[in-house]
Image (cartoon, helix red, strand yellow):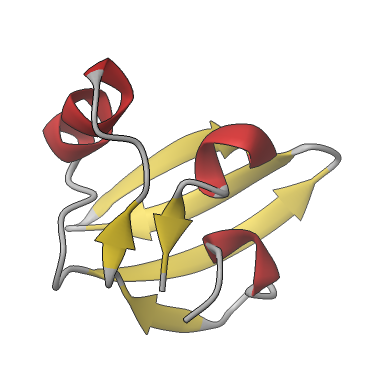
Length: 70
């Protein structure tokens, strides 16, 4: 298991765990980042990641992406 930030553009993986248990976890879950979902890295630009999850593209900064374990 490793943080989502380790994936390169074009790679995909399954979410195993969300590390934060407070409002951040609820926020990520509302965007579709739930255990068992498949996430694909569309691109990495600076400290931001563009991710494809459940047919939606979401931008997250690396601090937020580190809380998603794949």
